[in-house]
Length: 542
Image (cartoon, rainbow, N blue to C red; front, side, top):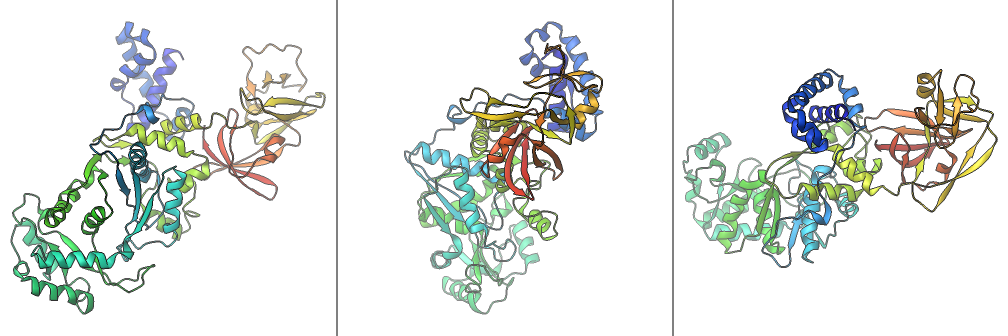
């Protein structure tokens, strides 16, 4: 690419990442790609300022469309990307999603990184479904099966699955032990008073309960105490500099019906209490968590210290933000209820189900997450880099011609059948028929009205007459796709839900459901199903 094109490419990328392109941030990136640009840095800065001004003036859809035509070098990935070493010879780690919905690409980071450490040390990866909130984050029955399937699709090897709602007696047992040791008590202060006490480091009267009194209060929580009137608290340091660590709550009353255990229990553990106990009993020796959970680790350390347990080794990393996509489970659930989305696999969503439906390969997601690694700073999902990894995973995907909004072109060519490789460099071939009547895309017909065009890999045609041109020189002639008549009806559904109709070459008729293909000069798409004689594909990316 020439210098002007490279400057515009990085201006588009900078606008996509930060909302507005800034020339000062692009000098190094352009020089890295065009080294000779360093010979005239003032001129380069002027060029970048103009490129940024032009790009910032574009409508969002045009900027995104133009950006999609460029490829960006992905960071080193896979086994070449070294994850931090840990002082553990055989890792036992876990992933712990809440089954209140299906997994999205944000969850994939923890899944993949944990799996990498387990495989690297011939260790174990546990799946723990944290379903101890039957009301606010009510578990979804379908998620209990969907989450392990998503993990398997990501090529994560789960060695054991634990469901917290099946472990309530274990949490009760440990709660009673802490009460007996004088490390926990039942607090019945009203929320407003409690919040004020903790903020001002004031000890409430409940904290002076004897173990016997606290045990009676705890038993009452199971039978007659009303919801919201009492919580079990872990004694910590009421003078701690962080108010959230002062006597944090371990268990509370929730009277909602649970989809697995019904109304059998009404006292449910909160996250830090259940997680600390489960991590110890499951033998977890490595925990990977987002840095936003740093306070949770401090809270859980009290449980480990009180029981004399050894805490797991912990690695923390920055959050992965997903811009321009609905990633909150509650919003997705509401959108599905309102009919905005067809389900968890709606291609407008960033769920793993939706990405799979579009033809995003698990190997691409794994490479991307490993490349992000264990770093403290937050990052934003870069779809273009993920798509680059996906292209690598799909390098052997079958290639086909696809013509959108087809118009007939009468060429008078002799009817015959060509043998083309299924993809560049492949030994296998596909039959590509040629007929006197061919189809080309309407936009190509409208754009090149008075020109001689090159029917890709076939011949030159004079568009005004439709006749084969005597001049078969390729240089300078627009190359366009074509499909022999009658073609196979195809509908391509984009990630934004829009639909594109067209025809493809006959070889697509033999595709197996779920095959991802490359429609040449159009993009990658996955064949999903056939409806009324039309092949339905979901678009992955250019």
